[in-house]
Image 1 (cartoon, rainbow, N blue to C red):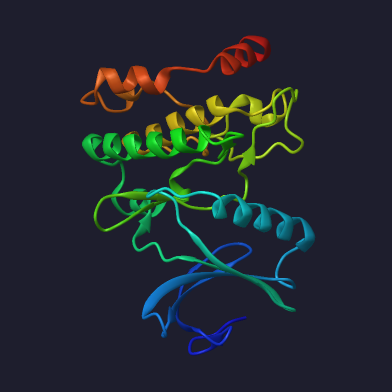
Image 2 (cartoon, helix red, strand yellow; image 1 turned 45 degrees about the vertical axis):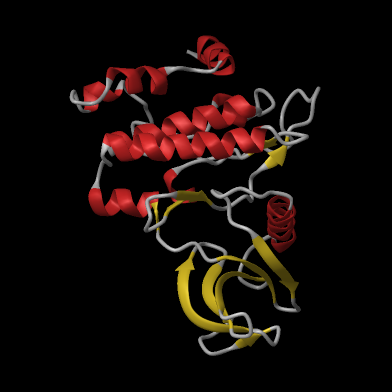
Length: 252
């Protein structure tokens, strides 16, 4: 594992640990020659099960981000595949995740949520307009960083995929329960509507404080949670994609 003070690739000095998940550690580093801070995501080969699968997912994330350029997406700077670990050097995104903001503050102000939703729509529109379209598939508060200036960035592209015309369904169902659209459970191929469904679940969590990935795993009309919320926003969140309507009518 990296440690504070270590020099990576003869140019990145490790300053501090800024995050840790189930399979990775994120470090704040300084490129002293360029006088600029970056983040390094470190995934150790002996720290995860099925490393080859994890490695494949991370490389897919890297290759996906390398081709993209958008103000609400981080940029990949470098990839170092060492004997012990995979190191991904990327933009340092200052701020906190929206999931941390929810834990600390509860439901977010409606005006803020609408502003973030517009930014998320902008970046999703960008991803869906690529050739072929890129489907993010795991939009949720934990994967959205809130920066000090109020803007957001989407992080973690490990589950993103390119849309393939004519496929009946995805090879591997991926997503987070509560936010995932019905087609992510293997009934249909994911497409742009999948991200729109995830967006609705994310907005619901932010504006109500109720986590759809926890029991009773439901998304209720938001004004039943808080009568002061906008009826227009409630209508937007309550809309379902045609795939969702077919799935629910078949299974319930």
